Image 1 (cartoon, rainbow, N blue to C red):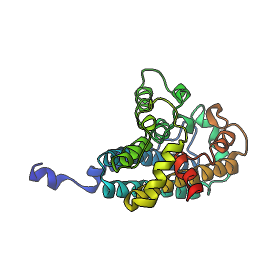
Image 2 (cartoon, rainbow, N blue to C red):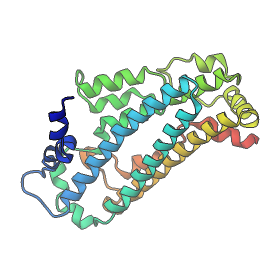
Image 3 (cartoon, rainbow, N blue to C red):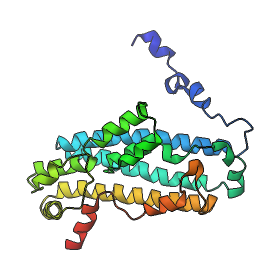
Image 4 (cartoon, rainbow, N blue to C red):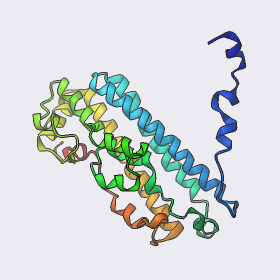
Length: 266
């Protein structure tokens, strides 16, 4: 980059502040006072989802390379971002049901279920359910990205590759399973995890990061459920979604079940 270009770069131009602040556009008929908060919070979530996808890609690459310290740092960052997602619920909960009701009708068919990035995060974490494609038009970039992600090994598979490279006996069928198939808890994988916990302190730290991330995701889901119940009760969500009822069904479902089940054997 030329010296004159470096000198011309400002805080505003580097972060594209003018464009960023032009993106909070309430629907016609507004704005209601609380609509700005609602838009900013959800746009911020999307930015964090983008960051999480970026960090999970890095974590997977570092795990497959056997780089424990790099993987630990990246997984720790993911854990901290998840805590930030939880804390943002506190802000959203300052909006009462009556305040939300002043602009809710303007959302029409818009729903958080249509967040392609959050759906991709679920896939990265191991969800394998082609019905999630139904919210996106075939041929759209969102549809194509999710379809490709459904055929890509999850972050947990990267953890299994990492453990196998450190001579923990990860079963062949777990290492070479079809990435399009849902992962099921595996006794043999739990044997390998137990061996790592007992004999490989570095690998044990990595596994504990997966526990942290799973716990953080469950905490965020719980806070999300309670926030929805607090705001709209058990009514259907926007876009015809089942609202809190669906969200509640996702609670206490670990995304990395083996790291929890192995605890019965310590």
